[in-house]
Length: 225
Image 1: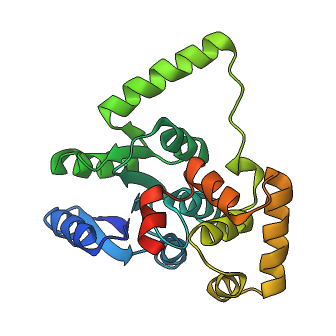
Image 2: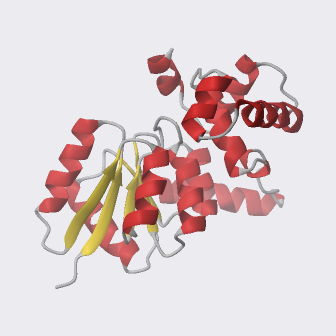
């Protein structure tokens, strides 16, 4: 039997271990890799080509949102299943717009998670029942109003989003340059472009924007400060 290959992207070790143990019991699923941050998730997906990535949203260095966008651009055949503690409509709609195959909240049962992995692998789209209802209600309201598509993060390049997250996580330009493997001048240029594009001219404002846009969460920021 050919197994469904799965990559786990989750920054909490205990959660990764729990997921790995859960999926190890399934004869048709194989965990081929684990990543504790979004940048590593992108790298491992390119190397291992898993069929499904189970992706958290709040991760250091690169959020699950941006990791999803980069993975689906680089390895479009991979199916992304978001597994997050947060079910905010903004997060759900951003990942759905990027092409994620599903979004589950972490309170989901083990049975439903395993079923969701099989379903997204089979080409289906899967959302937690509470999320599905909210999305349907919201889209119906927007349709009735002729709602315009959201702006925001979509205006930024992938590199600008990466730099923005590192700024919001408290990294200085030198640290961000080292993390991204680019020059300090390039980081400074991206920072300048961010301020111009977003009309925000201080680090605190960029951090607030990153939180509001779902690039980084308050809890992540507090653990780093």
